[in-house]
Length: 241
Ligand code: C5P
Image 1 (cartoon, helix red, strand yellow):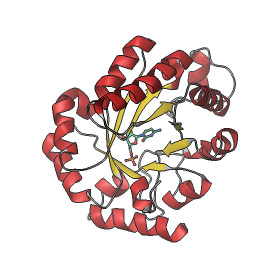
Image 2 (image 1 turned 45 degrees about the horizontal axis):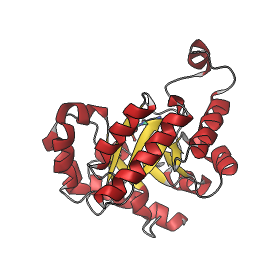
Image 3 (image 1 turned 180 degrees about the vertical axis):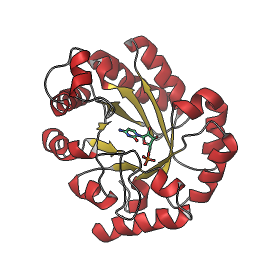
């Protein structure tokens, strides 16, 4: 983690429109740590679209949540490394062998291409699933039990960390130690609207509990002045440090 607290912040480019994504990227460069590109942008615009964003010099979190047999995920990770993300992710539910294949592919391909190795994170339990939904898929126990189980598996498979909700930061930090990276969405400064996010934390709360990276969308992209909003969050993080 660099000293600049703003480098923790990743802003999602949840759009299929390249010009909108470029406008946000250019505006926020130097004010946040990077952008998050997910399935909406990637399915519409592909690696060429991603290159237009990274050409602006903005660090990339490639949020494609791979989940398939180990060999296929390894191939997808190798293709992803060519887009030079600093973070990418896979579903921890794909199992230990799949996660290990992803971690190895990221390391080998980065060495081969002479680029820095991206952090590979596991997605544990989607926050859109409650305990009833989990039970319907055959998972008994609480969502937190399942998050901890999958995070331990991710660590054992050699992943760098997980994506988790704010409620899970402290138990995960306690169970997996200080080096395990935690990336947390659902972040809202106390001056921003919650929107459809239900269990929210402020940026400084999340970092105080042990978050390494924060995904912050609408409080920045939906603000009248996105740069001022990003700077305000950065200042709050700096003051809390
Ligand atoms: O900050 P905001 O709610 O606008 O951020 C939304 C982004 O965070 C979206 O890209 C969404 O996919 C992602 N996300 C989320 N909640 C989760 C996991 C990811 O909002 N539990």
